[in-house]
Structures are given as C-alpha cells and as structure tokens.
Length: 390
Image 1: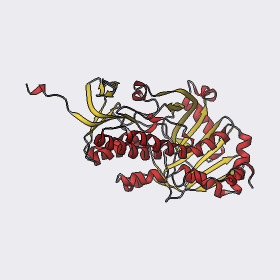
Image 2 (image 1 turned 90 degrees about the horizontal axis):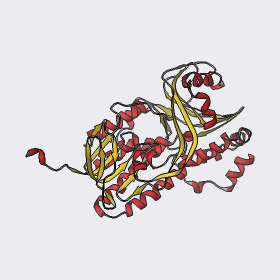
Image 3 (image 1 turned 45 degrees about the vertical axis):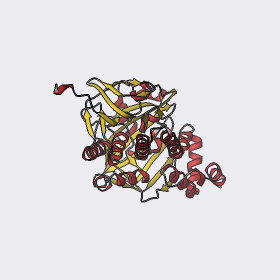
C-alpha cells in the first residue's frame, strides 16, 4: 500500500535544462518554490551559439552567484566590430564589458547550481503531452509518466515541443541558418566580437579562450544548400579563404548547424504555461545577444510564475509578456541593422564606413542591444549618421 501514494504536485515543472530553463529554475527555487526540471538529453551537448555574453548577461550570472566561476573559464569582451570591405567600425561595450565562454561549460555550471539550490533535475526525460484540467494544465506527460505541477515552463529551445503542443507556434518561419565550430587561431585574437559582412553570408568570430574562438557563419537557405552532404569540408573551405583567418587555424570540433530562424511565437504564455528563452521566439543570432536575453528573461519568467502561484491570476503573465517584448525589441536592434547590411553588401560598406566616422552612433546601437540603454537613446541624427556619415 505504500506504493499507492499520489504523485507529488510541484509548484513548477521546467522543460529544458539549458541557460533559460536552469536559470528560471534557480530563481524559483530561491523564492522557496518546489521545482522539477526535465531535460531530454542525458549528457551535455554543444550548441550552435555565438557564445558571447554581453554586460546584462554577465550581471545575471552575478545574481546567480556564478560570475566568478564563469570568469575563470572565459575571456573578456570589450566591444563589437563591424567589417565590410576595407571599412571597420568599432564600438565599446559599457557596463564593464562582456565575456566569451563555451556553452558546453556554462550549461553544466548552471544546472549544477540549480541542483544545489534544491531543484530536482531529471535527465533523459522527453515531454510527450500537456494534460489538461479544464483550461489549465495539470503538468506534463512524459515517457516515464505524468509530472504534475501548478505552473508549466517551456524552455526547450528554438524548435520547442512545448510551444508546439500548446498551440503557440507562430505561422511564419524564417530562412536563416547558422553553422558554428571552435577553432584555435594562429594569429592574435582581440577582445571584440567581430562581424564580417560578405556576399551571401556573415562571418562571426567570438573569442572564448586563449587563442580559441567560436566561429559562426550566418546565411540564408539558398547558400545553406552548398553545405549539404559536406558540412565540415565546406565550412573549413570558407574559413580558410577568409582574410580574417589568413594566419591559419585548427578546427577543434565538428561544425554544427541550426535553423531555420527566425522562429516566432504567438505569445509567451497560455493559461498556467509560460515560455522562456528561444522557446518564446528567436530572431537571429547575428547580434550575439541570445545568451544574455535568455538569462534576463529567465529572471522575469520566474518572478511572474512566483507571483502567479501567490495570486492565482494571469496578470503577472501579461506583465511578463510586456517585459519580454521590450527586452527582445531592444536586443534585436543591432541584429536588425546587421541583417539589413548583410543583405546588401554595397550598403554595408557605406554604412560601416559611416559608423567608422561616427563611433558614438555605433556605441548607442551596441548599448541598446546589450541592455545599457533603450530605444529612446536613438535620435534622428543617429539615423542620419548611419545613412550618410554626417
């Protein structure tokens, strides 16, 4: 009869154990909530990610008590540089700068912190359904049975199953893809996120260690076809032909591809379900702000869930949706500018040359993207400087 006890009902079940999921779970556990975290993979895997953490992301790691540990395995980032032809524009990051570090080290750091905070972590668990009790969810269904919870949080990434099961998938999907790998460079690495606008693709280089960088190609679907059946060989061929790596490099791991993006979400909540991180929508990887946005939005998500558990109404979720929209709108500004330039190489050369003449305009764009300023900081004269250099 001892086996007939009903299953526990948690305050929250978090689906996905990467940055957004682990950080949300840590914050909820810190608020005294009972939390179970379900992660599909049994072992940590590399992800297609720029691996640059901007100032607001570094501050979130500090709130989680992890910044000192992260700095031990990272390198500082001082700014962003745009390259188009011979034109180079540089903008410093405010707020003490950012850091570059590998996700395959950062993800387990957060998950270990979640376990230490009292989160019950279950690995190798795949969510198969969202059982309902009227309009609200009772929790999630898995291959090992139902997990009951008062709040369900989907943090399962770009191709979120929770988002799809909840009917929150947006109708439109983009045509952009990313390919990334780590390299050991034979030349010098500067403490900048380097973005090169080339015909048909953007090259993205982020230092993540001594003489090590994350190198990513961001490109559209037609160009992605060239990599079919020979991802590593084609990726390495593109890199070896690029002037940024003319001193040579050693490929340290297999290139990974992700996409398509953008991935849209109709809204980041429904009934007692919240979405966070890329599960709540992802625009584009070109700005390098994905990790920071995931960490900042995780705290906002946890605060909304905590209030809902106390108040029992959906107002905290509505406020979370507004907060997240404002955060994403700001962080995507640099990405939208970059995408416009990447689609038109001639315009990119003109605009980067203009930003070179007016670095204060570029610094405003980076400050908005990295959470150090908001959109009101952009004035008409800044747009004029971007277009004309005046």
